[in-house]
Image 1 (tube, one colour):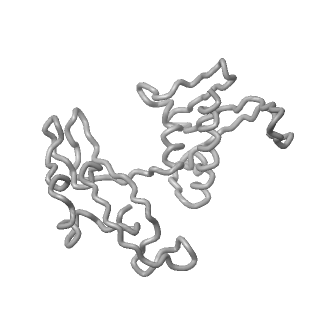
Image 2 (spheres, rainbow, N blue to C red; image 1 turned 180 degrees about the vertical axis):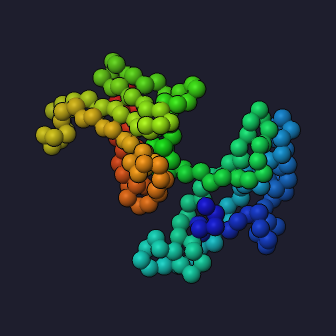
Length: 193
């Protein structure tokens, strides 16, 4: 969120005057819809470095703690915005894994779920049971020595925080780190092919 990052909000005074007119002047998209001030086309990076605070990551007196600015979106239906509000989007591994657990309920899934030639099968749950399950094939390499427990096939099963807590959405450091570990393993499955 721009409010908690070491960036200035490019839509607010006095920073809005620093945004070039070719960026701030974008009012409509190619099909005539109004473009929100937080749309990526209108984003302008204005760094405002500050001391990080101690312990690290706890922020400082201004509540700033990150260089990351998460994207925002306005919901659309039929190429027209259905709300005047914008929503923050998680763009970290937790957001990636949450998108994966909802993959099974998408009308047209983005990813192919089976790579049989590589021995990889990815199974998706649905909106009610929110999981993604996949395996990493057996690893045998004369050049790379892996611990014995990592040489056989590994099955991974990621449950969303929503599923684990029976309907409460939890986003904390533990869940972000858990999602990061599973995201690396899921990317390894994709790289295997």
